[in-house]
Length: 422
Image (cartoon, rainbow, N blue to C red; front, side, top):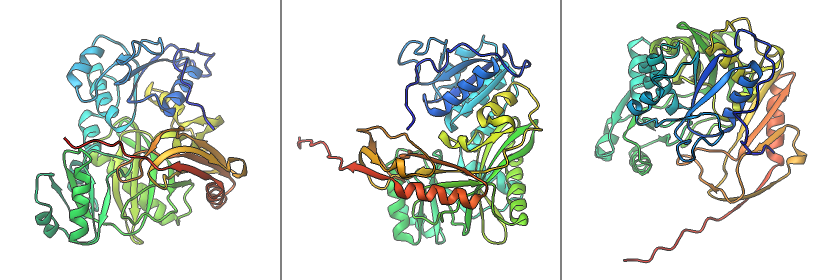
Protein backbone atom coordinates (compact mmCIF):
# COMPACT_ATOMS: atom_id res chain seq x y z
CA UNK A 1 0.00 0.00 0.00
CA UNK A 2 1.16 3.54 -0.73
CA UNK A 3 1.96 5.90 2.11
CA UNK A 4 0.53 9.41 2.29
CA UNK A 5 3.75 10.94 3.66
CA UNK A 6 4.34 14.07 1.59
CA UNK A 7 7.30 15.50 3.53
CA UNK A 8 10.06 16.74 1.23
CA UNK A 9 7.95 16.15 -1.86
CA UNK A 10 8.80 19.48 -3.42
CA UNK A 11 12.19 20.49 -2.05
CA UNK A 12 14.33 17.40 -2.51
CA UNK A 13 17.46 18.46 -4.46
CA UNK A 14 17.17 17.85 -8.19
CA UNK A 15 19.15 15.04 -9.70
CA UNK A 16 21.12 15.46 -12.88
CA UNK A 17 18.69 15.84 -15.77
CA UNK A 18 18.66 13.78 -18.95
CA UNK A 19 17.09 16.73 -20.77
CA UNK A 20 19.38 19.74 -20.67
CA UNK A 21 16.78 21.97 -22.37
CA UNK A 22 14.63 21.76 -19.23
CA UNK A 23 17.36 22.37 -16.64
CA UNK A 24 16.82 25.52 -14.56
CA UNK A 25 13.41 26.17 -16.12
CA UNK A 26 10.51 27.11 -13.87
CA UNK A 27 7.12 25.42 -13.87
CA UNK A 28 4.02 26.77 -12.10
CA UNK A 29 1.70 23.93 -11.06
CA UNK A 30 -1.89 24.65 -9.96
CA UNK A 31 -3.54 22.06 -7.73
CA UNK A 32 -6.15 22.00 -4.99
CA UNK A 33 -4.81 19.21 -2.77
CA UNK A 34 -1.58 17.51 -1.81
CA UNK A 35 -2.56 14.35 -3.67
CA UNK A 36 -0.66 11.56 -5.34
CA UNK A 37 -0.56 13.27 -8.72
CA UNK A 38 1.37 16.18 -7.20
CA UNK A 39 4.05 13.75 -6.04
CA UNK A 40 4.34 12.43 -9.60
CA UNK A 41 4.74 15.95 -10.99
CA UNK A 42 7.30 16.79 -8.30
CA UNK A 43 9.27 13.64 -9.12
CA UNK A 44 9.18 14.50 -12.85
CA UNK A 45 10.42 18.04 -12.20
CA UNK A 46 13.22 16.73 -9.99
CA UNK A 47 14.37 14.27 -12.66
CA UNK A 48 14.45 17.06 -15.24
CA UNK A 49 16.15 19.64 -13.01
CA UNK A 50 13.07 21.87 -13.19
CA UNK A 51 12.17 24.29 -10.41
CA UNK A 52 8.55 23.57 -9.46
CA UNK A 53 6.35 26.14 -7.74
CA UNK A 54 2.99 25.02 -6.38
CA UNK A 55 -0.03 27.35 -6.52
CA UNK A 56 -2.72 25.94 -4.24
CA UNK A 57 -5.71 26.93 -2.17
CA UNK A 58 -4.45 24.83 0.73
CA UNK A 59 -1.03 26.29 1.49
CA UNK A 60 -2.41 29.43 3.16
CA UNK A 61 -3.51 27.25 6.09
CA UNK A 62 0.09 26.55 7.11
CA UNK A 63 2.79 29.05 6.24
CA UNK A 64 4.89 27.57 3.42
CA UNK A 65 4.36 23.90 4.50
CA UNK A 66 7.04 22.40 2.23
CA UNK A 67 9.54 25.24 2.46
CA UNK A 68 9.41 25.64 -1.30
CA UNK A 69 7.83 29.08 -1.66
CA UNK A 70 4.40 27.75 -2.61
CA UNK A 71 1.95 30.46 -3.66
CA UNK A 72 -1.38 30.74 -1.84
CA UNK A 73 -4.30 31.21 -4.25
CA UNK A 74 -8.07 30.93 -4.12
CA UNK A 75 -9.68 29.31 -7.16
CA UNK A 76 -12.93 31.19 -6.59
CA UNK A 77 -11.13 34.57 -6.34
CA UNK A 78 -9.16 34.89 -9.59
CA UNK A 79 -8.39 38.62 -9.37
CA UNK A 80 -6.85 38.25 -5.93
CA UNK A 81 -4.93 35.14 -6.96
CA UNK A 82 -3.59 36.63 -10.18
CA UNK A 83 -2.33 39.65 -8.25
CA UNK A 84 -0.21 37.31 -6.10
CA UNK A 85 1.40 35.90 -9.27
CA UNK A 86 1.78 39.11 -11.24
CA UNK A 87 5.49 39.79 -10.74
CA UNK A 88 6.66 36.19 -10.99
CA UNK A 89 8.38 34.55 -13.95
CA UNK A 90 7.81 31.02 -15.20
CA UNK A 91 8.56 29.03 -18.34
CA UNK A 92 5.50 26.79 -18.23
CA UNK A 93 2.14 26.21 -16.56
CA UNK A 94 0.38 22.96 -15.64
CA UNK A 95 -2.72 22.12 -13.63
CA UNK A 96 -4.26 19.18 -11.78
CA UNK A 97 -8.03 19.23 -11.36
CA UNK A 98 -10.92 21.03 -13.04
CA UNK A 99 -11.07 24.01 -10.68
CA UNK A 100 -7.33 24.75 -10.72
CA UNK A 101 -7.13 24.57 -14.53
CA UNK A 102 -9.37 27.64 -14.94
CA UNK A 103 -7.10 29.78 -12.77
CA UNK A 104 -4.05 28.25 -14.46
CA UNK A 105 -5.39 29.36 -17.84
CA UNK A 106 -5.98 32.89 -16.57
CA UNK A 107 -2.48 33.02 -15.10
CA UNK A 108 -0.96 31.74 -18.33
CA UNK A 109 -2.69 34.50 -20.28
CA UNK A 110 -1.42 37.13 -17.83
CA UNK A 111 2.13 35.74 -17.86
CA UNK A 112 2.08 35.16 -21.66
CA UNK A 113 2.81 31.44 -21.35
CA UNK A 114 1.33 28.92 -23.84
CA UNK A 115 -1.59 27.06 -22.29
CA UNK A 116 -5.30 26.56 -22.84
CA UNK A 117 -7.28 29.84 -23.18
CA UNK A 118 -9.24 30.81 -20.09
CA UNK A 119 -12.48 30.76 -22.08
CA UNK A 120 -11.81 27.19 -23.18
CA UNK A 121 -10.98 26.07 -19.64
CA UNK A 122 -14.21 27.62 -18.37
CA UNK A 123 -16.18 25.86 -21.10
CA UNK A 124 -14.73 22.51 -20.04
CA UNK A 125 -15.92 23.26 -16.51
CA UNK A 126 -19.48 24.13 -17.60
CA UNK A 127 -21.45 21.23 -19.06
CA UNK A 128 -24.12 23.47 -20.60
CA UNK A 129 -21.69 25.82 -22.32
CA UNK A 130 -19.67 22.87 -23.61
CA UNK A 131 -22.81 21.27 -25.11
CA UNK A 132 -23.63 24.56 -26.83
CA UNK A 133 -20.14 24.75 -28.35
CA UNK A 134 -20.29 21.13 -29.53
CA UNK A 135 -23.65 21.80 -31.13
CA UNK A 136 -22.40 24.98 -32.82
CA UNK A 137 -19.50 22.97 -34.27
CA UNK A 138 -21.96 20.51 -35.84
CA UNK A 139 -21.11 17.66 -33.49
CA UNK A 140 -23.54 14.92 -32.50
CA UNK A 141 -25.11 15.84 -29.14
CA UNK A 142 -28.29 14.69 -27.35
CA UNK A 143 -31.11 17.13 -26.62
CA UNK A 144 -30.32 19.22 -23.53
CA UNK A 145 -31.53 22.11 -21.44
CA UNK A 146 -30.32 23.98 -18.40
CA UNK A 147 -32.26 24.27 -15.14
CA UNK A 148 -31.95 26.06 -11.81
CA UNK A 149 -32.77 24.54 -8.45
CA UNK A 150 -35.43 27.15 -7.79
CA UNK A 151 -37.34 25.82 -10.81
CA UNK A 152 -40.33 23.53 -10.32
CA UNK A 153 -39.07 19.95 -10.86
CA UNK A 154 -42.51 18.66 -11.91
CA UNK A 155 -42.67 21.26 -14.69
CA UNK A 156 -39.12 20.44 -15.79
CA UNK A 157 -39.97 16.74 -15.84
CA UNK A 158 -42.65 17.46 -18.43
CA UNK A 159 -40.02 19.00 -20.74
CA UNK A 160 -37.84 15.90 -20.71
CA UNK A 161 -37.96 12.73 -22.78
CA UNK A 162 -37.02 9.45 -21.12
CA UNK A 163 -34.59 8.05 -20.27
CA UNK A 164 -32.62 11.19 -19.51
CA UNK A 165 -29.66 12.20 -17.35
CA UNK A 166 -29.42 15.02 -14.80
CA UNK A 167 -25.93 16.49 -14.34
CA UNK A 168 -24.66 19.21 -11.97
CA UNK A 169 -23.05 21.90 -14.12
CA UNK A 170 -19.70 22.14 -12.36
CA UNK A 171 -18.91 18.73 -10.90
CA UNK A 172 -16.70 16.05 -12.45
CA UNK A 173 -15.96 12.31 -12.16
CA UNK A 174 -19.66 11.38 -12.46
CA UNK A 175 -20.42 13.05 -9.12
CA UNK A 176 -24.11 13.97 -8.92
CA UNK A 177 -24.94 12.42 -12.31
CA UNK A 178 -28.23 10.49 -12.15
CA UNK A 179 -30.31 8.73 -14.79
CA UNK A 180 -34.10 9.14 -14.69
CA UNK A 181 -36.44 6.75 -16.51
CA UNK A 182 -39.69 8.61 -15.79
CA UNK A 183 -41.02 11.83 -14.25
CA UNK A 184 -41.05 10.45 -10.70
CA UNK A 185 -37.36 9.50 -10.93
CA UNK A 186 -36.65 12.90 -12.49
CA UNK A 187 -38.15 14.76 -9.55
CA UNK A 188 -36.34 12.56 -7.02
CA UNK A 189 -33.00 13.03 -8.83
CA UNK A 190 -33.53 16.80 -9.10
CA UNK A 191 -34.11 17.13 -5.36
CA UNK A 192 -31.20 14.85 -4.50
CA UNK A 193 -28.74 16.85 -6.63
CA UNK A 194 -30.15 20.08 -5.22
CA UNK A 195 -28.92 19.08 -1.76
CA UNK A 196 -25.33 18.94 -3.02
CA UNK A 197 -24.97 22.74 -3.14
CA UNK A 198 -24.50 23.15 -6.88
CA UNK A 199 -25.62 26.31 -8.70
CA UNK A 200 -27.61 24.51 -11.37
CA UNK A 201 -27.86 21.43 -13.52
CA UNK A 202 -28.23 20.21 -17.05
CA UNK A 203 -30.81 17.76 -18.28
CA UNK A 204 -29.96 15.82 -21.42
CA UNK A 205 -30.92 12.73 -23.34
CA UNK A 206 -29.39 9.42 -22.28
CA UNK A 207 -27.00 8.03 -24.87
CA UNK A 208 -27.01 4.25 -25.30
CA UNK A 209 -23.77 2.35 -25.73
CA UNK A 210 -20.38 1.78 -24.14
CA UNK A 211 -18.08 4.43 -22.71
CA UNK A 212 -14.50 5.23 -23.65
CA UNK A 213 -11.85 7.76 -22.67
CA UNK A 214 -9.12 9.41 -24.70
CA UNK A 215 -5.98 10.92 -23.19
CA UNK A 216 -4.12 13.42 -25.32
CA UNK A 217 -1.99 16.52 -25.71
CA UNK A 218 -2.82 19.68 -27.60
CA UNK A 219 0.08 21.57 -29.20
CA UNK A 220 -0.63 24.96 -30.77
CA UNK A 221 -4.23 23.88 -31.29
CA UNK A 222 -3.46 20.46 -32.79
CA UNK A 223 -4.67 17.42 -30.86
CA UNK A 224 -2.66 14.23 -30.54
CA UNK A 225 -4.16 11.16 -28.86
CA UNK A 226 -1.84 9.38 -26.43
CA UNK A 227 -4.16 6.52 -25.46
CA UNK A 228 -7.68 5.24 -26.06
CA UNK A 229 -9.19 3.48 -23.03
CA UNK A 230 -11.99 0.93 -23.09
CA UNK A 231 -14.37 0.94 -20.11
CA UNK A 232 -15.53 -2.68 -20.15
CA UNK A 233 -18.06 -2.33 -17.31
CA UNK A 234 -21.52 -1.17 -18.46
CA UNK A 235 -22.37 2.36 -17.31
CA UNK A 236 -26.14 2.43 -17.59
CA UNK A 237 -27.17 4.16 -14.35
CA UNK A 238 -28.88 5.17 -12.24
CA UNK A 239 -25.40 6.33 -11.17
CA UNK A 240 -22.28 6.25 -13.33
CA UNK A 241 -19.39 5.11 -11.16
CA UNK A 242 -16.34 4.48 -13.31
CA UNK A 243 -14.32 1.39 -12.49
CA UNK A 244 -12.04 -0.18 -15.12
CA UNK A 245 -9.93 1.58 -17.78
CA UNK A 246 -7.90 -0.61 -20.18
CA UNK A 247 -5.65 0.39 -23.08
CA UNK A 248 -5.07 -0.29 -25.93
CA UNK A 249 -8.67 -0.49 -27.04
CA UNK A 250 -10.02 -3.81 -28.29
CA UNK A 251 -12.60 -2.15 -30.54
CA UNK A 252 -12.51 -2.49 -34.31
CA UNK A 253 -10.37 -0.03 -36.24
CA UNK A 254 -13.36 1.92 -37.57
CA UNK A 255 -14.79 2.36 -34.06
CA UNK A 256 -11.45 3.57 -32.72
CA UNK A 257 -11.13 5.97 -35.62
CA UNK A 258 -14.59 7.42 -34.95
CA UNK A 259 -13.81 7.88 -31.26
CA UNK A 260 -10.47 9.59 -31.89
CA UNK A 261 -11.92 11.84 -34.58
CA UNK A 262 -14.74 12.89 -32.24
CA UNK A 263 -12.25 13.61 -29.45
CA UNK A 264 -10.22 15.86 -31.76
CA UNK A 265 -13.37 17.70 -32.91
CA UNK A 266 -14.38 18.29 -29.30
CA UNK A 267 -10.98 19.79 -28.47
CA UNK A 268 -11.25 22.15 -31.44
CA UNK A 269 -14.87 23.05 -30.67
CA UNK A 270 -13.92 24.19 -27.17
CA UNK A 271 -10.80 26.03 -28.33
CA UNK A 272 -8.20 24.13 -26.30
CA UNK A 273 -4.74 25.26 -27.42
CA UNK A 274 -1.76 23.91 -25.47
CA UNK A 275 -1.66 21.24 -22.78
CA UNK A 276 -3.27 17.98 -21.75
CA UNK A 277 -6.86 16.99 -22.54
CA UNK A 278 -8.99 14.15 -21.21
CA UNK A 279 -12.09 13.28 -23.25
CA UNK A 280 -15.02 10.99 -22.32
CA UNK A 281 -17.15 9.48 -25.10
CA UNK A 282 -19.85 6.91 -25.90
CA UNK A 283 -20.31 4.70 -28.93
CA UNK A 284 -23.89 3.62 -29.68
CA UNK A 285 -23.03 0.88 -32.17
CA UNK A 286 -23.01 3.24 -35.14
CA UNK A 287 -21.57 6.61 -34.08
CA UNK A 288 -19.38 8.26 -31.47
CA UNK A 289 -20.88 10.80 -29.06
CA UNK A 290 -18.97 13.33 -26.99
CA UNK A 291 -19.74 13.35 -23.27
CA UNK A 292 -17.18 15.57 -21.55
CA UNK A 293 -13.83 17.24 -22.25
CA UNK A 294 -11.41 18.30 -19.52
CA UNK A 295 -8.45 20.65 -19.99
CA UNK A 296 -6.30 18.50 -17.69
CA UNK A 297 -4.74 15.03 -17.52
CA UNK A 298 -6.57 11.94 -16.30
CA UNK A 299 -7.09 12.28 -12.56
CA UNK A 300 -5.73 10.70 -9.42
CA UNK A 301 -3.45 7.72 -9.68
CA UNK A 302 -4.92 6.62 -13.02
CA UNK A 303 -2.06 8.29 -14.89
CA UNK A 304 0.17 5.44 -13.67
CA UNK A 305 -1.33 3.31 -16.46
CA UNK A 306 0.53 5.37 -19.07
CA UNK A 307 4.24 5.06 -19.75
CA UNK A 308 6.13 6.28 -22.78
CA UNK A 309 9.58 5.84 -24.32
CA UNK A 310 12.18 4.75 -21.74
CA UNK A 311 9.46 4.40 -19.12
CA UNK A 312 8.62 8.11 -18.98
CA UNK A 313 5.38 8.63 -17.00
CA UNK A 314 2.55 10.84 -18.21
CA UNK A 315 3.35 13.61 -15.72
CA UNK A 316 6.91 13.93 -17.05
CA UNK A 317 5.60 14.06 -20.60
CA UNK A 318 3.28 16.92 -19.56
CA UNK A 319 6.11 18.80 -17.81
CA UNK A 320 8.33 18.52 -20.87
CA UNK A 321 5.48 19.66 -23.12
CA UNK A 322 4.60 22.60 -20.85
CA UNK A 323 8.21 23.80 -20.99
CA UNK A 324 8.30 23.80 -24.78
CA UNK A 325 9.96 20.47 -25.57
CA UNK A 326 8.80 18.63 -28.69
CA UNK A 327 7.37 15.34 -27.38
CA UNK A 328 5.54 14.37 -30.56
CA UNK A 329 7.84 11.40 -31.22
CA UNK A 330 7.25 9.79 -27.82
CA UNK A 331 5.01 6.72 -28.00
CA UNK A 332 3.14 4.74 -25.36
CA UNK A 333 4.74 1.47 -24.24
CA UNK A 334 3.84 -1.67 -26.23
CA UNK A 335 2.31 -3.64 -23.35
CA UNK A 336 -1.35 -3.35 -22.42
CA UNK A 337 -2.19 -1.67 -19.12
CA UNK A 338 -5.19 -0.79 -17.03
CA UNK A 339 -6.55 0.47 -13.76
CA UNK A 340 -9.54 -0.30 -11.58
CA UNK A 341 -10.80 2.51 -9.37
CA UNK A 342 -12.03 0.47 -6.40
CA UNK A 343 -15.64 1.48 -5.81
CA UNK A 344 -17.12 2.22 -2.39
CA UNK A 345 -19.70 -0.56 -1.83
CA UNK A 346 -21.57 1.23 0.95
CA UNK A 347 -21.49 4.30 3.16
CA UNK A 348 -19.69 3.96 6.47
CA UNK A 349 -16.31 4.25 8.19
CA UNK A 350 -13.34 2.53 6.55
CA UNK A 351 -11.55 0.16 8.92
CA UNK A 352 -9.30 -2.23 6.97
CA UNK A 353 -8.79 -4.46 3.96
CA UNK A 354 -7.71 -8.11 3.68
CA UNK A 355 -6.63 -10.17 0.69
CA UNK A 356 -4.06 -7.89 -0.92
CA UNK A 357 -1.54 -10.73 -0.81
CA UNK A 358 -3.90 -12.83 -2.97
CA UNK A 359 -4.19 -10.21 -5.71
CA UNK A 360 -2.32 -10.84 -8.96
CA UNK A 361 -2.08 -7.11 -9.73
CA UNK A 362 -0.71 -4.10 -7.84
CA UNK A 363 -3.16 -2.83 -5.20
CA UNK A 364 -2.90 0.65 -3.68
CA UNK A 365 -5.39 1.50 -0.95
CA UNK A 366 -5.86 5.24 -0.54
CA UNK A 367 -8.66 5.16 2.05
CA UNK A 368 -7.41 5.75 5.58
CA UNK A 369 -8.67 3.99 8.73
CA UNK A 370 -11.41 6.09 10.28
CA UNK A 371 -12.24 7.81 6.99
CA UNK A 372 -15.93 8.37 6.29
CA UNK A 373 -16.90 6.76 2.97
CA UNK A 374 -19.58 8.31 0.78
CA UNK A 375 -20.63 6.43 -2.39
CA UNK A 376 -21.82 8.08 -5.59
CA UNK A 377 -23.68 10.18 -6.48
CA UNK A 378 -22.75 12.36 -3.48
CA UNK A 379 -19.24 10.98 -3.02
CA UNK A 380 -16.16 11.79 -5.07
CA UNK A 381 -13.51 9.29 -3.97
CA UNK A 382 -12.56 5.62 -4.21
CA UNK A 383 -11.17 3.06 -1.79
CA UNK A 384 -8.03 2.83 -3.88
CA UNK A 385 -6.66 1.63 -7.20
CA UNK A 386 -5.59 -1.64 -8.82
CA UNK A 387 -3.01 -1.61 -11.64
CA UNK A 388 -2.06 -4.30 -14.13
CA UNK A 389 0.21 -4.69 -17.15
CA UNK A 390 0.23 -7.66 -19.53
CA UNK A 391 0.72 -8.67 -23.14
CA UNK A 392 -2.97 -8.13 -23.98
CA UNK A 393 -5.87 -5.98 -22.83
CA UNK A 394 -7.86 -9.11 -22.02
CA UNK A 395 -5.18 -10.33 -19.62
CA UNK A 396 -5.09 -6.89 -17.98
CA UNK A 397 -8.84 -6.88 -17.42
CA UNK A 398 -8.76 -10.40 -15.99
CA UNK A 399 -5.98 -9.47 -13.54
CA UNK A 400 -7.89 -6.40 -12.39
CA UNK A 401 -11.09 -8.36 -11.77
CA UNK A 402 -9.30 -11.23 -10.01
CA UNK A 403 -7.50 -8.81 -7.74
CA UNK A 404 -10.65 -6.92 -6.86
CA UNK A 405 -12.46 -10.18 -6.07
CA UNK A 406 -9.66 -11.10 -3.64
CA UNK A 407 -10.15 -7.97 -1.52
CA UNK A 408 -12.34 -7.97 1.58
CA UNK A 409 -13.10 -4.55 3.03
CA UNK A 410 -14.21 -3.88 6.58
CA UNK A 411 -16.56 -0.89 6.64
CA UNK A 412 -18.29 0.03 9.90
CA UNK A 413 -21.68 1.67 10.10
CA UNK A 414 -21.39 5.42 10.58
CA UNK A 415 -23.46 6.58 13.55
CA UNK A 416 -25.20 9.92 13.14
CA UNK A 417 -24.47 12.50 15.82
CA UNK A 418 -27.50 13.07 18.07
CA UNK A 419 -28.77 16.62 18.05
CA UNK A 420 -31.45 17.43 20.64
CA UNK A 421 -34.49 19.32 19.45
CA UNK A 422 -34.51 23.02 20.36
